[in-house]
Figure (cartoon, rainbow, N blue to C red):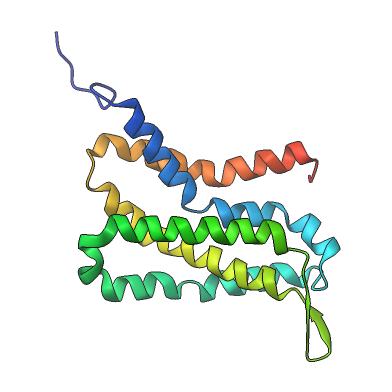
Length: 169
């Protein structure tokens, strides 16, 4: 007796990697948001930092626009573009861990320019992932989409759980 199910003939490694790709979609900005209570007490922007993050995330929507304009030319290199965005997100995250407290004087006021610039890069990676990763998943059997979407859901859940363990909430 044979029944067809989306759970039959699955390769666990594909599920794991599909979920990891989904997690990488928005984990950086979600992680940054969970750290906002710490950042607002230690950076000169205080609670206006949240507005800056929102504005930068909206500006970062230029990434999907640019990708959309060049998507036909980039389609053969889709996997390389994904690797490039993951690389940029990784580098920006590492630099953010090092330079998040650094400030500069602009117009006589202290500003957290490094965190703002790195936030823009992270947001651009995350916004672009929305139009880049899902079409890439079309290269796989549809049964693996569930793992990808579970990963996307975890991209908000995991940073929240880490923040809870840190005692931020």
